[in-house]
Image (cartoon, rainbow, N blue to C red; front, side, top):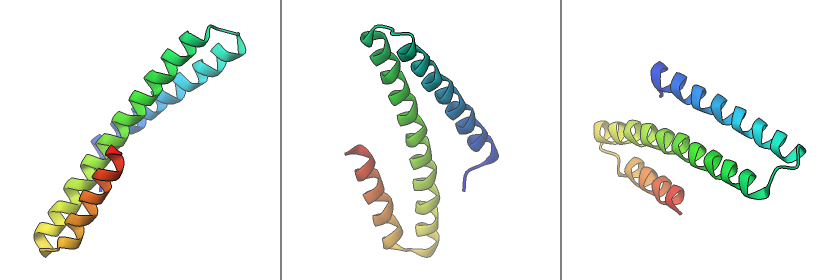
Length: 88
């Protein structure tokens, strides 16, 4: 479960990303140079990656704490699998 502080921060980041994507749409509509558009898209990709990484971090910590309490190897394996998929 995400803390209210982390949840609010992630929502703030996603709203910023939303603004960036709207800006990219306006750039395309205005016929801006592809290189400029691609730079903005790279920024959006990096920003969404950071949001994903934070969510994975929070999820992994919560699952590992549960696994430690329950001594469940399945939860640990689940977290490891998720981390490997994200990295791929």
